Length: 152
Image 1 (tube, one colour):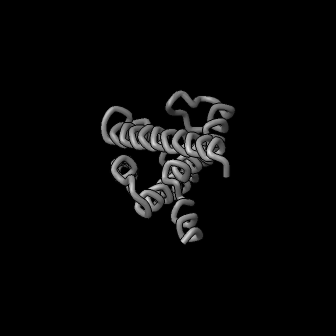
Image 2 (image 1 turned 45 degrees about the vertical axis):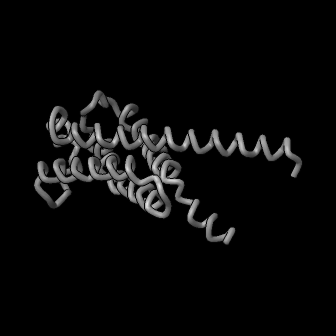
């Protein structure tokens, strides 16, 4: 590899690390804000989103999911070293996957909340869920442990 190509590669890697770090901080902050909203200002709206088929007390579901978001947000902000960073990213993706049935139920049951008062808006929200999962995977750099193992 020529020195020029090595320098370009290094710049790309630095940019990639910075972008991933910014993404990680933004995700952690968003999770903490959402978790706090579950427990305070938006609690009633979150309660309205819990599907009727969930076998637990509605308020308990909102509170515990708020705690989960706070914990995931804090973990996302403090885990910078691998493999813990990757584990946190996977946990975030699994959390977003776990709440997906509730978002589907909101659409199917036509429940209003958070300004989602039409089927089109509720369906559009569903389209963002895979993006949230991908964001958690990206921020956690979940492929890094595999890359390191392959290079060893």
